[in-house]
Image 1: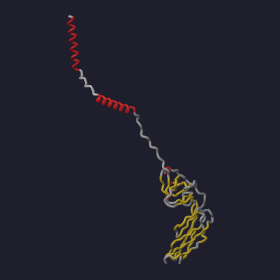
Image 2: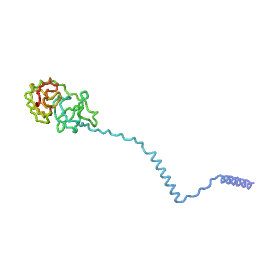
Image 3: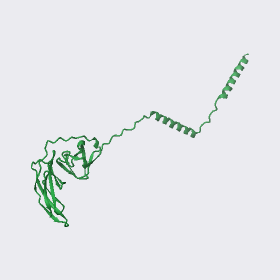
Image 4: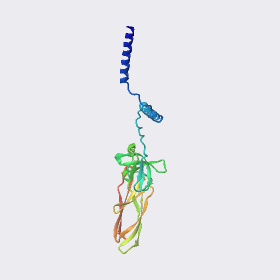
Length: 247
């Protein structure tokens, strides 16, 4: 009886073992050395990539730093830089066409630029039409000049106008007129001289004469006018006429 039980146990074990062997997967072929090395490298690279992806911080693009461009004024035509925002103010320095000067302020209401005078510590004004701005001039401060406490200057008086003519072609003559005047009130910033109503000179207060040379038709009546100006405005014009020029 004991041997029968032992036989049954062994038989059952054999059946279970056979069943298990029937479902066991086939053992894979071993890798060659080169295949194993390639697999190891691939796995290592994959792990490194995953690790770098997980550990790399997210960076925001850098914010660009604004670059400031110095505001400058290119001078378009020969002009005067003055103590105020109109052509009646005293001239500080003469500016030549093609110069570039440093901009330091503006008066938008008067259409004028405040600049640093070249080779000087002085500041002065240039009318907007006489220059072209560049750089970051939009951020310049608005500057309002102090109002003038002056009154317009007195009218200057002619004191001499000698002239002579040089023959030209029988119809036109070359004429030269030496004009001189006085400033009775000594309160002018400068003088403007006109021939036949057209301005021919703008002179500082220290200059009270001008030599005018031009061509004229024989027998022309020629008129000259002069006016003084200062911060408050211009004086009335004084006019004189030369009869039958170069007859």
